[in-house]
Every structure is written in C-alpha cells, then in structure tokens.
Length: 116
Image (cartoon, rainbow, N blue to C red; front, top):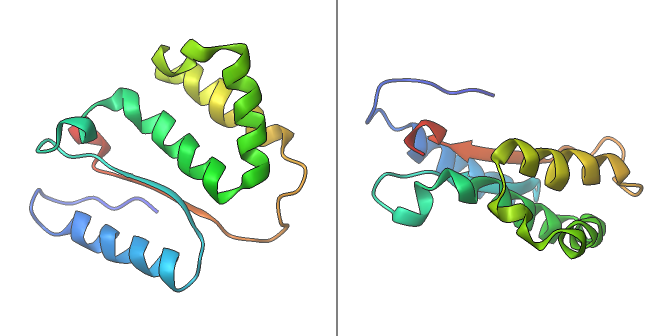
C-alpha cells in the first residue's frame, strides 16, 4: 500500500497507528523504519536496509541464520551500496528460506523514505 499526501497531513501518525495494530493485535508487522529529518539516525538512508534486515531476522529466526552466513562472508556489507545490500541481505537470503509459513501475511513498513 502506498500512501501519499501533502506534508503535515498525518501520514506518519496513521502509519504509526497501523504498525501498532499490526504488531500488537495481529502479530504480522515483521519490520518497520520511520525516516525523519528531525532524528539524525532516522534520516540516514544507509540505515534503512540493515535495520529492516535486523527486524526481519528477529521476526523469522530461520532468516537470522541465513543473514549470519552473509555477514560471516562479508562483514562490510552494511557499508556497501543499498542495491547490493538489498540483493545480498534481502533477496538472496529470502529466496533460500525453507520454512516460511504458507499463506501467512507479513508486513514491512517504510515511512517517509523521501526524508532520507
């Protein structure tokens, strides 16, 4: 789902409420990142992928083993270009997942990516 609108119209507030509901009531929020110009660590685009990967590894313990293998092979992956991070930390390990529950919906949220 893509939400857009003018600045200050409450998109982040809606997204935070949605994340709370998805996590607390439905247990399907696998990962989230809220970008923000006011918080230095939340405006660094280099932190988006590593943060999401960390949260996905927590949500899916079997995914964490695959991520650990990637990190053991290349400790500097978190300092590489986002395209390489996406490929090596998300796409490739996710494709190797063997025990994902079929039919289970999981949600990943990125808010205000344009603020990075």
